[in-house]
Image 1 (cartoon, helix red, strand yellow):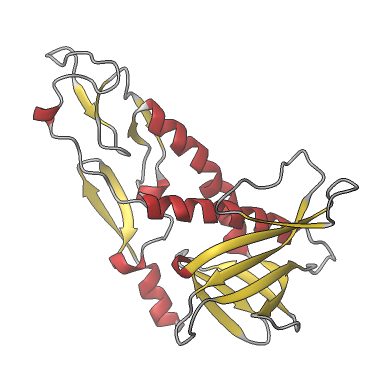
Image 2 (tube, helix red, strand yellow):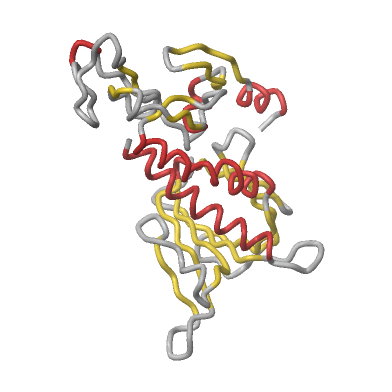
Length: 251
């Protein structure tokens, strides 16, 4: 990707919607795959009462719309202002209690895990059924749309084209298998309190010019200091990214 094309992909503009100020991609096609569209607000005439506590709206009890779900509530049920980066809001916006809880849980991904993905980590990478692995740095592109792999060669995988993710773990108690795989998009990661730790990841994706489903395997590699800590953190962050990606598709 040329620097000129990359600059166009990363260009942002400030827009004002009924919900607040948003910093959105200049070109809609370059939006983050983790983003959510603003919801349609429930029309005022269709909500004479709060959709949570059933309080009747009048001169004193005003109606407010949750910026995440678009439903109509009283101030008591929709008085929290919480950051909503998935909709690109510049400032925290009004949300109902249920949506505010979800948004707060997502905040860790945007504040921490996303930075880890953008920074990248070192892996041994093999494509398809090949047993030959190449040392490469894998990171998320600045517009969050591509996984970039750089080593002797350069590869780009569009995030929305990833169809399955499996995290490879090891270190289960004696009697269990030394290596365990699970499909992270359909389940939960290994318990943080358990003995298992992530050692790699397998991705299935569709690629231009490739018939069927392509696959690659990432095995945690050592950084310049001989540590696999950054690679392990990257795998955990990618697991959370995969869950958000599927949630975006379902909404």
